[in-house]
Length: 136
Image (cartoon, rainbow, N blue to C red; front, side):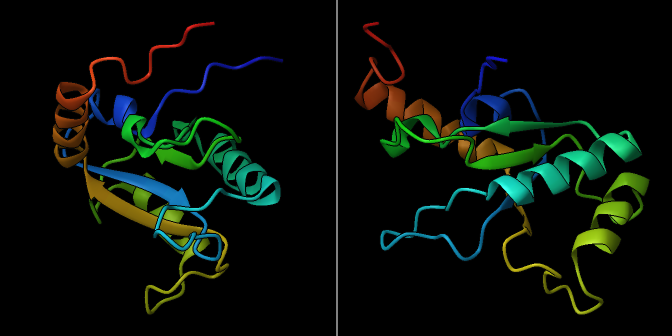
């Protein structure tokens, strides 16, 4: 079934504070761009989130990245980055070892300041107002 996949920065614009997300550690390209999450990894995270009532959204790369092909690159979690949050604790227990390292090197839990992404998006759109505009 077709699905609208929004960009990472577009989702960040709706959120506040730190944005939790998964990315693949092993698929970072030579420019340091985040790699795509494998199909298996995405299914595993989605199933875990559904089973525990955790809201999430798959997303494409940020609008300024230049990536226009491929599937979802991130799984953005609608969970506050707070150690006291029950959903955050469930995610950490499932996907991280006690020392904070990932249990699966293909599923690494990260966080980034949502405002940082929003600011980068604004700057990119100032430089090129046609970013993200399709001619199709």
